[in-house]
Each structure stands twice: as C-alpha cells, then as structure tokens.
Length: 300
Image 1 (tube, one colour):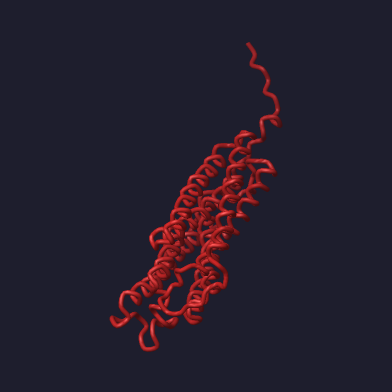
Image 2 (cartoon, one colour):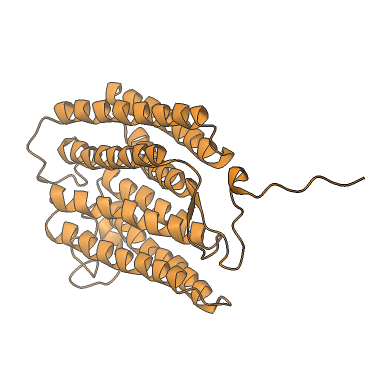
C-alpha cells in the first residue's frame, strides 16, 4: 500500500513541478547543475521544487524495495508476488531515465507525455502487488460472465485513451513547465481538449452500462461496488475538468485533475481485478449450486 500511495504522490508532485514552471529548475540530469548534485540558493524556489520531486523518487524506490523484501521474505515464498515488486522497480527506473530525458531535451512535450504515461503502468503494478498479496495462488475463478469481462476491457482501453489524450492537452496547453520558450504540441489545445471531453463522456457511458449490466446479471457485490466507486471518481473528475476549462486552467485545479487521473486508473484496475477471485491453492473451490449433488432427506 505504501508503494501504491507513493506512485500516486509522485504523479502529483510531478504535476506541481510543471504547474509552478519548475521543470528546468535543475537544468541538467542526473545532477542538478553541472557543478552541483543538489540545488543551490541561486536557483531559487524553482530549483527547490524540481530537486524535491527528484528526491521523492528515492522515497518511491524505498517503498517499492520494501514491497520486494516483504514479498521475498514471505513464507511460503510466492514467485509471482516478487516479480510484481521487481516490475515496479524497473518501471521506476525507466521513468527516472525519461524524466532526465525531458530535462535534457528542454521539456520536449512528447518526452514529457511519455514520462507521464509510464505512471499508469507503475500504478497498475503497485495495485496488482497489493491485490495479489491479499489473495491466494490458486487458479483465478471468474465471478461474472464473458460479456461483462469484455465490456470491462473496453472500458479500460477507453480510459487509457482518455489519459493519453489528456497528456496531449497538457502538451499543447499553456502550462509548459518552464517560463522559457518551451516547445509545445503544434495543435490547438482547445480542439484536443474537446476530444478529451468526448472521450470522458464515452468512459462515463461505458462505466454506467457496466453498472447496469452487473445489476441485470445479479453479479456479486464486489464488482458492483468497484464500478460504483469508479463512477464517483469519474463524476468528480468531470466536474473538475469542466471547471478548470472554463476558468482558463488554474494551476490548483489542473493539479487536482492529475490526481483524479491517477485515481481513475486505480479504480479501473480494481474493477478488472474484482471480476475474479483467486483462492489459496489448498482451498477447495465450491461448485455452483446447480452442479452440487442433492443431499438425502433426513430420516425420522
């Protein structure tokens, strides 16, 4: 859970770097300047903000390392759980390299967008690790039918597209990440923002359809509750999105919108995971009621 929290926090602090125009507060990488590993007083508040975000990467690494050690020390050892922990580590390392590339390319918007798009992957592995630590290693048993699973995957794909287009909105919008002449995505940000809004309505429609489908098939409470949670986060995110658009993208609301994007992805992953259960390998899986042998009637 510490790794999950830190994977979200690093998104928020990365957004703070951009929204305070501190993206080049440390003008080089991996050091802060050519002559100093850390920020200096001459670099002011922007250097402090950028350097703080870099230092939080080490806190994230510590949380991921803690998860790896805990998984490796568990009795009995679970190979799959350990691999999920290491997957988080390698994504963090890859994202650190992309973050450095963003600085070295003077905040190229496509590199910055790629830097952000690795965050949902990190969040996915962190949530998977957390969920699998609370389950067994038995074969997954579906709790819903195939049409529900297919609709959920369509919802996940649409949500991924929504987040990806959101990075283009940021790449074309006014928050370039630094006060210098930073290159932008050569499209009108209002046009791409309209596409982003359209995709948001598609995701909301798919989530609503999934909720009604789960009720129609009398699905277990777990999947229905996870979809309900997703709808709450989506509606909250939609309100923030429209308010920030009509108020000309104030920094605080944009930061909250980035937090909302991370929470939406967590909610989508949890919906997918709620569609099955994984008992412990030595736990017998009960047969459906219609397949169970009838019990003899009690005698007098």
